[in-house]
Length: 133
Image 1 (cartoon, rainbow, N blue to C red):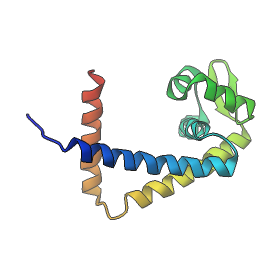
Image 2 (cartoon, one colour):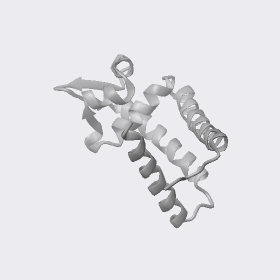
Image 3 (cartoon, one colour):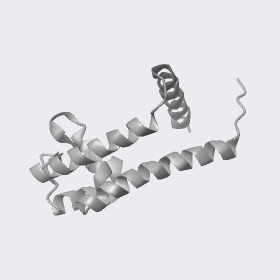
């Protein structure tokens, strides 16, 4: 199948979306006094069962320097190869997750469930194709 795409338009839309996501993380970052990368890592851990994750997976997601900041800022603790949120980390992560959810609800306004299903399916296919390279 030969798919043609307006590459410039695709890249601009992608850039606009990621810029908006970045702005959301930036706002949470300013409110909580931590970096955007810490915000993303907190949300990642928060979404895991029991608000803990394998340290190696978190390090591969956000980098060792970010997990070091989380522990230094007492937002997370490392124990037995896992990183888990502290009380303060959990509160910050919950606030960040709520801000992120509000952002995505706004971004997805006026998009039907069918359109969202197609969009997610297309993104999954693109991700699968990219993973081959």
